[in-house]
Length: 214
Image 1 (spheres, one colour):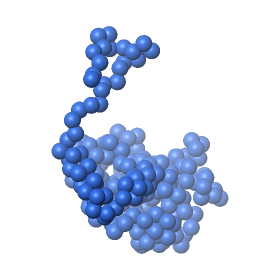
Image 2: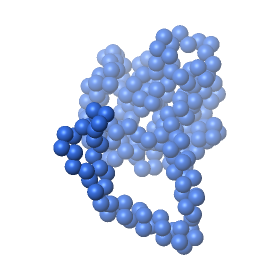
Image 3: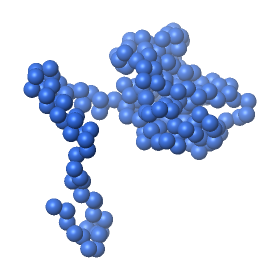
């Protein structure tokens, strides 16, 4: 039963957290019913489902950062990545499944930014869960109409001479941006370079960190 806190503050002085005891939605009920039916019929097991959930939770932008760092340091891998990112990332142990992955390289004159105008298609196996703003209607609609304004709001101001290319993810196709390698990193090892690669830089809404900020 929810508690009636008249002063809205706990003894510690912090607001009480709202009770999360609302009824299950239709889709939550359907998920539970289908999951229990699959287990009952022997199609899968609770342990297998939990293992998949744990594997999904373990995905993070660090995987994508490792791919970018290798592309910065290994010319042959960079060529393979730009030619067939699905195969190249599989060779590193990151299987994105049946979807096609396309690597987009930022340069001094070209800046790529990724959006999913329909929903939230995103390379989760490489970057983990998408940020909330990536799924927002404002980002999905404004990025295709005014990408420079959106980039500026993320703190990325580009010269007028830089071409901005917007790429729309789909249900069977994902993109990962290879940010422009920061100056002053010649001779750096891949592990150190990976620390400069941010999640936003692999979406295109950010830049790789400068060496001084690492």
